[in-house]
Image (cartoon, rainbow, N blue to C red):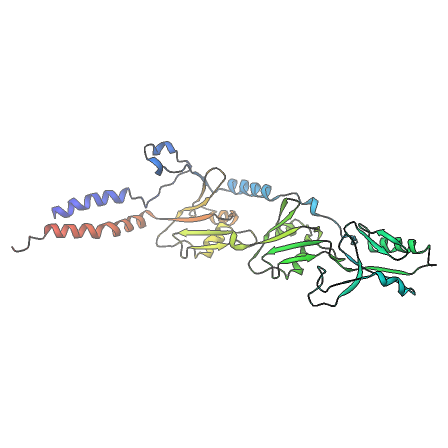
Amino acid sequence: MKWSVMLLAPVMSACISSPGMPKMSSGYSSSADNAGAGTDAAVPTLIKQITPTLVKSERSRRDQQRSQDLSSLLGKPGAYSIEPGDILSIVVWDHPELNVGAAIVPAGAGADQAPGATPVAGFIVDHQGAIQFPYAGVIKVSGMTQEQARHLLAERLSKYIRNPNVTLRVQSYRSKRVYVDGEVKAPGLQAINDIPMTLMEAINRSGGFLPAADQSQIHLTRGGETFHINLPQLVQKGMNPNNIMLANGDVVRVVSRDSSKVFVSGEVIQPRALPMINGRLTLNEALGESGGINPLSGDAKQIYVVRKSATEPVVYQLNAEENGALALAESFELEPKDIVYVAATALTNWHRTISQILPGALSAAVGAAKPPTGY
């Protein structure tokens, strides 16, 4: 009996100061408190209580971060302008002999032609933006619409042909392209043609979004600058995504939802990683998707959200037993890579510590009290 008491005494003292019983309070945990601890000193962590004031300030901060100026991307659809590389089809009615200058372009040479298509005959706009046509000579058509180029050609031919009837159109669009990548069905190059190339038009030509696409994270890169587009947010603000016009060389990338996960751990029914839906996931939704707080072991007073910031991690704490806590949890929006942690109750920590230490202590006590072999 004496041996058991002697062994149980340090066990009980270990339970009182068990490392499995974290006690967190608001404010900084100063690194000075860990002096002499060497490299194992804790990183200073700021703990904030989740209150209505904090939820409001977080929403304001998040809106400021998301409010990127997209005015340079907005525009109205205009007529297609001819550029170097395009192939023009030109017909002068009643004068078939004038079409002898048309070049035969191999099938699939155009950005908007499928491999195996019938070769097209047309006038290729050279690198200087000009074409050569019988009687008219060299005509610079770069930057012109089809109608403007037709009028210019008819004016040149009028010196040799009375009232020339000219038809001019773009046979193959090869001068302007955009690239669509990421979570779309058919990523790749898309040629800009006479149909205005808006953001939604480019995504639709690529087969549309995949189920894993995050429509709140569409990155559009133009001239070295990347714009972050949140489609649901644009619609909420009353902005039409079809007003975002793409230009030659633009790169559109649709990010996967898997890159914006939130991790739920601790005393919940099902610890798991949750993808954000269109860039949004609240604390209440994260807990609900994980089955809620474990009623046998979870401490509703100690719900933490760990968030990595530029300088140091920030921990938000929610006491779910307070009035209005559910409303706060529903209003508190999480961010990608957040960690939601539900701490265990003091009794649960004490029970787990005992279950790990006590069996070994009892075995030692029994072994010490057993008489030596042979007596």
